[in-house]
Length: 163
Image (cartoon, rainbow, N blue to C red):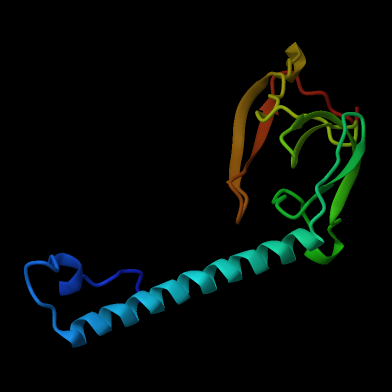
């Protein structure tokens, strides 16, 4: 019952002592359970205090200030290509711009890490000269393994290099 997290309801808990005589075995079982629960609470409090003291002994509160230089961990970066063993563990240094709580900071990215537009830029359309207008599609083929096509075309005013 102690490892399950529930406490049984005993007759000694629910009955009033003035009304009914409780059997001595039941009352002694209740006393034994109360001692076990008290011992369990003491043990858990002791373990909690021990863990707290051990953690606080090795823990140092960060003392970041605006303007300090910091390194940024790349542990959760999923956009760095290449093998893991060649990946840098930290990048930077970066200048702290603002503090957000005790453990979170806002940094200013340098020129090595510019902010990029998430949408790709479109290629401007190519203007065709009058002599480069297509007269006829002679042949078309699709490259194997790619979603790409090639066309053999004849222009209206062909310019021959051998002339």
